[in-house]
Structures are given as C-alpha cells and as structure tokens.
Length: 340
Image 1 (spheres, rainbow, N blue to C red):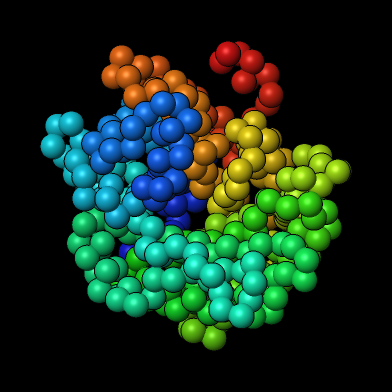
Image 2 (cartoon, rainbow, N blue to C red; image 1 turned 90 degrees about the horizontal axis):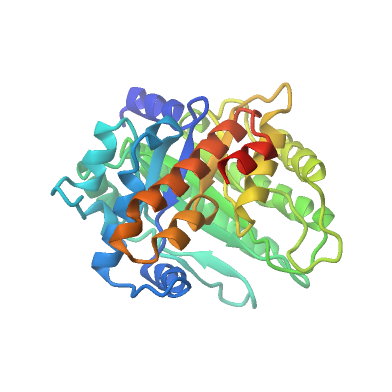
C-alpha cells in the first residue's frame, strides 16, 4: 500500500473547481440511453461516444477524474492511445467501476446487495497496471414500505468496507457510494432519515475493517423528495438537509465528498451542488461525480453522427464548466441563459 500515492490521488480528485465524470455505465444502461437517441449500442459506438467525452478540448479544467467501465479502460482513442493513458497525460485521473451490480438480497423483498467481492484483489492489481488510480463501488438503498431494513443497510455497508480495504491495499483510492434512490413517494424527511442511517452504517463498517478515512472519497446522495411525492423540496432545503446529514456522519479526516445526480435534471443537480458548496464552515470540499447530469446534452447532440461530435463536445464542456463553478458556489442561472 502506497499511502503517499493514495493521499495525492484523493486530494487531486477533489481539487478546487473540479469534479468527476461518471462514464462507467454498463452495456445495458448504455443501450437504454443510446436507444433514446436512435443509436445502436455496439462496442464501437460506445467507444466513439465515450471517446468524444474524454477527448473534449479543455475539459481537464473542470474534470479531475473519470470513472471508466471495464470495457472502456481497455479501449483506445481514434489515434490508438489507451483511454487511461490519454486521460493521465491530460492531468485527469483514470478510475474504474469494480462492482458487479446490485442483486436481490435473499429474504429481503424489494431490497438489493451489490456483488463483486470475489476475485476483487486480483482485478484491482490488473486495473492498477492499466492505469486506474481510484475505483468505485455502488450500493443501492430503496425507500419503501418498511424498507430499507437493518439487514440491507448493513449487508451493503459490509460490502463497501471490504471493497474499500481491498482498494487501499492495492494503492487505489476507493469511492464509496451508498446511493439512496430518488424513486418513490417518500418525503424529504424520510429521505434524510434513511440517508443518515445508511451513512452511519457505512462508516461503522469502514472503521471495523481498518479503512483509512484519509484515503477515501464519499459519493453521496443528495437529500431530496421522492420523485413522486406531492411536495418537492426547494434548492435551499435540499442543501440544508444534505449538508446536515454529512456533518452528522462523515469524518472531517475525509478529503472530500462528491455527489451523484441520481436522476435529477441537469439544472437541478447543478443548482443543488452550488447551494451546498456556497455554505460556510464545511469540513471538506463538496463537488460532483455526475453521469447523466453531465452527459445528457452531449448524447442528445451527438445522436451517433460523426458530424455532430464537435457540437456534442461543446455541450459537454459547458455542463462541466457549469458544475465546476457550482462546486465553488459560483454558479448562477443566468450563465445557462448566456450559453443558450
């Protein structure tokens, strides 16, 4: 375990004005998104699309790292340069998704636990050789009638802790993602309660597995109203509740927190991040690790057409810039209008 490398990597991931692009969608998720714009989900089309994102000129000003899928870390640019090496040369840290997806949790109807611990140390060694310096593991917490259960929270916390320990042993910074899903009719009060419980369970498990908080990054859910709840909380309430939960549960020793967008609109994800980052007295930097909230405009512009790549890169660059401002509390809605 190279503690100096871990510390350097973690600090760079949450550098001022920068965040993380999550480009680690599975082939199934890619197929759904590609279908929405009429693009066939082939391996080559996935390479071209991710390539247009990763090679966007100037995006390194706002993107500190990219989470890659197993397929992508083995692919190359049009010029034959491995994506991981290309990113590193631009000053962007390559990362890798290492979990095997959420599966049904036995005897817990409606709940899931993330698989992928078997063979993980060996896979991490290979990913390190391929250039990855951080990794990601996503747990899924659903809010519903009588769920999440204690069983679900602690099964996922245990898996996250074992994953994190394996990462640190391999000199790879673990991104820890206990995602509380946006789907449902629950109130924002219920979301806050569940988010706090999930984080408490996660950090207790991390401590039990001797994980160094100084060498981890939390990928957190924002505390928001359920998608189908009658009252949708405003930006300031989301920011207040989200930060309150983090202050109650996340050690100050941790280098930073990155937020997932979790199905929010592009504008909402940016506005919520901006409101939180603008708060005073935070013990850690807050920034982004977005997938759809960064990629949506680029995907809709590209539509699988080579002639649209430059315009798609411009759209991606704009969203990265907006969120780069938001993680400093400097974003304003009128900046979106100016770009339009």
